[in-house]
Image (cartoon, rainbow, N blue to C red; front, side, top):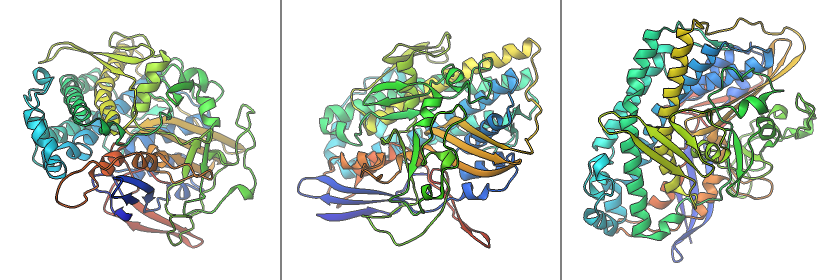
Length: 573
């Protein structure tokens, strides 16, 4: 038995470490601990502020996907203050989210996770596998243009491979589209409660379309590349199906609201949530158990037994029920208080700055493919020419470009592992580009019909207590902002991100978080002579696209001490 620690885990956004104990004889991991090494205090910073500040402050939680935090904050304020955006405001806000995903997904597939499957890595950790790749024809060469699997691996090489460089260029295309309305990225200036504060014209929409359409052919190639890579590894050694394997417990809040159905109320969230372009839902052991946002909200809890925080439940329950009278757990985000308590690391006790969010006291995977899976099973997606939910798959009809019109089909996988997470992210590029196309069309139709308003005026209530929650999503998956106002100022603010959920430590019942579960199930398959590299462990972790904190904020009675860390992103509260 020997300890193998990865500190830091590289090619992830932010500060993540991972502790393992490896049985070298059995070639398996017998102990795994996921460690968020920095505390991000945005929840504490929000206390006592005007709620509108949340839009600009919380976006700074992330240097990759800050726009999603701005919008989640706006949604929470809309619910607390009773404000509904006009239809165009909702549609354009949706469009900005889709564009963010078109930036985020290629970033993961080719800059962060992609190098794990490159010539530079595979030839070193598994030389026999690379030799096989040199002899294996690529089944989809007619789409992506690579004749051998080794050709794909070569172009996945970091910094110099053409797929790496192309993806970098495509992230720029998406950012160019975003700033046409968002003003700048990753910290937009035009997101407001009640819609957006930008002037939108048909010319603006046409400029956005010119960039969206570039993703249609790109998506065809990305899917073909990842289908070939994933299937090659499975065929070469079936044990790769266990790399990053976890139970099929997935959660997502859905996103992209129907402008007619969305009214920003908690009372109707079950109805308007199910009319989103991505259906909210919870999947347990592969079976969908709910698509109702209220039910999803009620099941949320956070625990800190193994985290560097003090327990808060003993302080009394802030809210015994939700706004509809349903009972709330003392550990629900509306009842949570953020009380950092740094101390020495103990693998048996407290070892991370991540909390342990659970749904119905079960560890969940909040990764981006949860939106594909829930939408595929629910069959509630709005009627449209491009996307069909079949109950077991999503059919995606990509328009012709330089490549012909192509129908793709993402199928619910029979095993949930690192390769299927990456494959799902590849199909998400296609799915998101088609959602963006539908949203662009809807925005254009509203403009032509004279419905050009993009925001609704409102006032912050100056008395009483109001609750709100932003049910939203990031490129990496689930995102919620829970808000409490008293007399017009923020008295509690809680953020749950996908990496908060996935990077979580063990809970009071000793159930590991999803990073930990994935690593515990991962066999050690590397065969290279260069010593233990841990590539299989790293593939398992990186398949979640971890996104950790970029700034440390330490709260004391005297104020807030801030230490700037030159890294990026979001994920741990």
